[in-house]
Length: 493
Image (tube, rainbow, N blue to C red):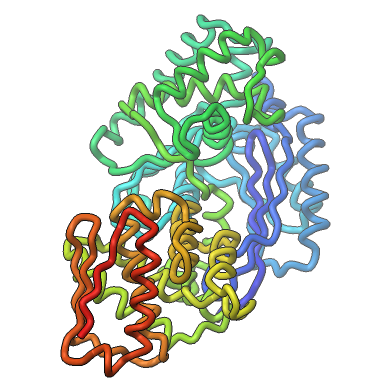
């Protein structure tokens, strides 16, 4: 059984070669190292589909550097996959043979559908456990993958021959960004993508995610312009399109958030993204954290039974790593659930699960220092990589853990304005204080209910005389909420 091993995934893409090293420890991947080199191998493919000597040499030089980093890794812990450029290249065997020698490991040229399924696996591995129907889009350098799936399972996967490198070379050959060039590129992209409409229809998904370089580049630019981070929408795409046209040439692009290695291929990527929005009638999509390389990493350990539930495994892993008192964590989680069910009987399973994870992890900061352990725990959650959790979900867990005790003004404003955050926060704070003696509290006579911004907590049968410390802590809690929009009323007998 795997417990703490390092694995490496190498993605030989048309624009960039990437190396991801992850340590599989306590049931989840922790990134050890990530290397990326802009090789632009797809740009070295000629009209007869032969890779130029220069393009091959750029790739070999990169693989030699990767090979030095991977020296000593067990053969079964490394997987290198090549995608569309090498699928097309007629002289790929020459490149692959020499490349494998330099890397020190075999290189697989994978089929388009397998690439699509690995992308879906990588994206879903960093998303929360959910039964939602997902559409995953990946605009690569010379191919675009579309995958429909549910939870961790890809159900429809396809790979189409268009990408940011190929489209930029073909429709913006001299870096000229005219409105007409964009129009022609979009029409051509729609013609290729039209094939997807035979298998994918509007309404087949609940949420759309886009992974890899093009989506990340567009997302970074839109976020830098003041739009919602991690979201690409039609209005933002139109703004970006107009900004590129105004620049007239790639050399004149001045956009915050645009990395230099994306300048030459951003126009082709934007034209394809616009075509996808048009054909699939998309309003917006989420930029995914996962990508092909995460999918490859998971194939290396997918036979391990510890990987079946990444979110639960990640939580258990963190509890073990930080020596959490599991009995106390489960105790707090049970009390918090009881209180949340009273506060908001219609609370979704998703919010209950978030509260449960926060309760299980509420003491992870104690290993660093008992003083201010809630702040230490929040820092750990903000700066760890927990498989199955998005960045936003890790931030929410961190806010709950930080807010489990003490003053409330240290929290982000939305934690004290939105009921879906306030109710779990109150439930966790009350559970922590009621479990202060590290034994099960007497819950039979305790009641709590919400009435707008007022919470009413009551206890009967001489409860405050029987549990004077708990009653004292509740009175302190009441004072903490007085400095917010909410109010906690106590009726302790």
